[in-house]
Image (cartoon, rainbow, N blue to C red; front, side, top):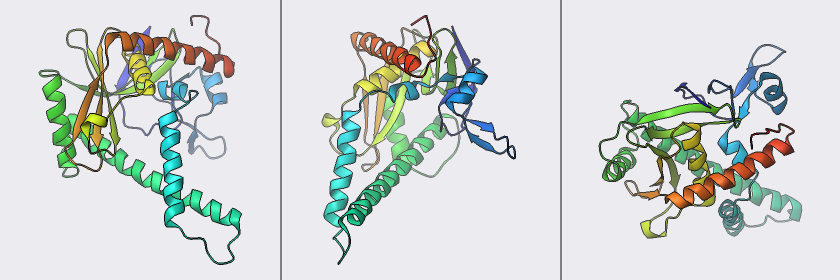
Length: 262
């Protein structure tokens, strides 16, 4: 059974949801009542369910690892070793610089994503206009006439997982969209990965529209207006759901939150 909560813009930091589909990313601390990140121990006592992204976190991500390695190599090429600097200190400085570069790119991607999301929710913004218009044009070209529901959180009470979907429509059999920002200049070289596939396959089940079409919308960070829509085939989504269920069972067993329905 899937329960859907109202839209929310709370930053998803620790990836937990209540059984009625509401985000539970923080809990009051015992010390002074200030919010702190929700932990696995909290989830046990409060009967919370993990998010789709938390479940996917147990799988290997070759593309991400490759990107992180490239960031380290780029930092090493641009940071000369200081006189008398210890090798360990030099390596630590390279790694720290690569992380800062990665955070900068991620932060800009988040800002673009928020601007696009805000547009679909009717919020006026002067930021990232080309990114927004490119996304609107691409989505409309593929899925004309749909009314989009944005930032909707949910919990699947039977299978015990939750999440928050960028955009979906319930028209016909439904459409589920997840927006990804990344650096690219050639639309023909943009591809989706199994992680994207599993995420969308889980979202459509969690939202209660298990036959929905699913697509990733890739928005270029460095070429404003360049957007690629990647819709997954039916057979891919079936495979993605099976892979997600295998990871879900592994996660539940690993964290001693077994669910006999898996």
